[in-house]
Image 1 (cartoon, rainbow, N blue to C red):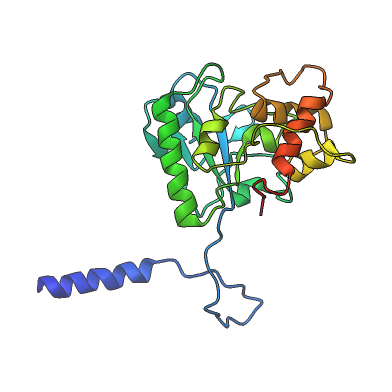
Image 2: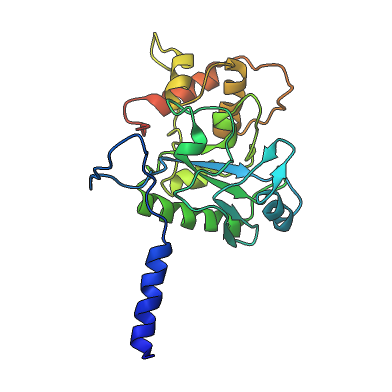
Length: 252
């Protein structure tokens, strides 16, 4: 058999094995060309809080104490990037919680895990790799660069990662995520800091937990999840005003 004919036969066989789009037997199939793959609109950053990248690779392909778990990407401390789930698939990294009007974060996001024990600084090579990866994701997938959050932001009552030591200001300087512009000013009369906290995206089912997550990200103040709920103070209000004033970056 000629090589060209063999190649053609192999191609036909592969096409024949390709899965067809699922069709509901209750309906007549009248296909429209007006569609596209589901697209993520959010990036959620995590810290593994484990001892090594090998341990995390195993966990993200099996389960943790809460059940099966995964993420789209894992970045090692030396800057290596691992992909575990295709970008058009729903990874199990966020769990219960929400951000703004997004109530099913797993379905709307790309999850990125950082190999980090949860204490201490993040490695420079790791953050540089993260910036390269986010630039690629936002460029290819059309994710707004403002839509980068912490796992703790969308689940403040149960999560604290990636920790108060995460360099959010460096990410903001590269164009990712909001960051309050200094100098901070006293808010105008009538400013409601709790409404501002919600406008940033934080869920207010547990206001104390939301404030704790906000402080961890924007003020670098770490608190245990079991600590008493914090009380919103004047510095919180100034930062929230800086984040939500008219010239601040807005969420879509």
